[in-house]
Image 1 (tube, rainbow, N blue to C red):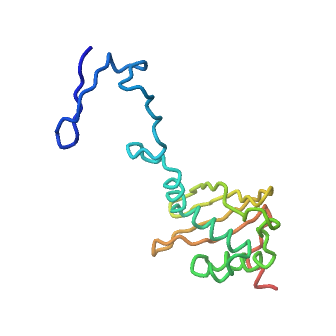
Image 2: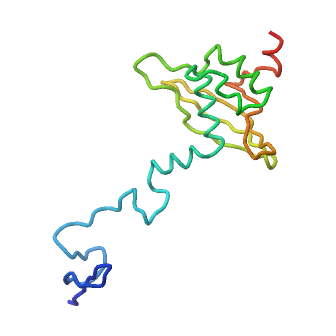
Length: 173
């Protein structure tokens, strides 16, 4: 058997251990090694909370969450004023009073964005679609984002569950 010396970061010896090798059956103590933690700092992206925070920074998820809060009645429509263009704001004012994404009956979870993906037809444009879960219901939400000259993303169109509100519908009422 060969002796293996271990050292700390400062270079001082902390002790020795003996072992016959480093293979799968080799142990240095009487206990099994713990499996690697999901939050291992050497493996980036393994922390679920960090992945969630990273996801929420994407424009498509950020807007999907804001649209969900507006269309579920949890936030007023004017909350989206600086984040929408004229036609999309008109669509929201027509959809929001119906609260089409309102929370499920009491005792159930509030609606959440389950998944959101995007298609980029050209630079500065994102066409996004999201699946919204509320209890046992699943709804579709589609929206278009356009990047302005100030480099801010703004929503320019909204569709919910295939029922689009025609442009200018709110203005005609």
